[in-house]
View: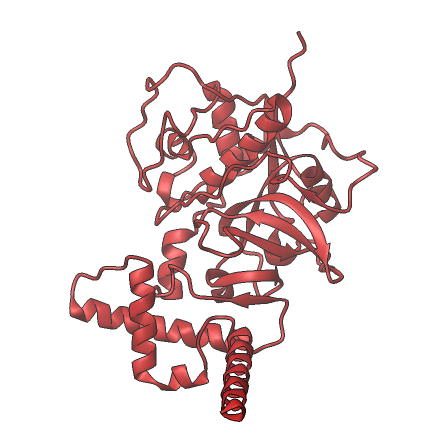
Length: 353
């Protein structure tokens, strides 16, 4: 009897080890057998849909979404079989084709940046910074609000702007206040286009001209364009005194800026791996046609790989709790995904009484 119990325990241990190894290999919770089994894929889809509260208008629409989901599962699985410094995983976007995803969740508008650059021609204020710490994480310094979710509104430019303003405001005043992206989407309409895209420099200029920006509690996010409510509150809780562009294609300058405050950056995020990034140091294939706005909130190194810590606006279920670590020191002036091409930050002077 004892020998039978030992044998059974041994089998269970081996099975657990094999399953754990398989789980670690796929890093997505499914295996080669799952990919070959329509039943297993169906079950995976149903469980995923329930987890993300997905409801479809018709059986035909559900079938179409399942087919997209199946293709995405295969992409994730095949990608994770490669030896890379990052991995992919299922998230709420798994029933969207990549073209659909790009159309809804990217929203940087490359326009006439020179219109606002003229107001930001002063010398890069961090140029002479000599000592930079090896690692910086503004989350640990209390200068970063929880990750937000732009939803299917291309307002990433507003989220990037607001995160940078939230950061410098906390650094200067000691108060971390969650600010309103919705106010920018509704009211900053001279050059920016709400859910159809925008640019952070325009938004910084708007906040200066507007005398500040409301708190998020006073002007909450709708995940869609609304009507500008300038009189919602006459008190603008946070203001800035200016903004500056980081010298283009200069990673050292970007590093200096991020060492002192969160910085708005633009990247190309249209690669399929970006849609399903789950963790690790991202160094995947991407170009430099900037189409998404995010915020650099720190930098560091791991296993001899240097990276920027990037706050995204796709909710905490994407990436590393809403963040992505993007490789730096790539040897290319424009940086990975063009991150060094178009960075800027707000300025807020501390009042001396």
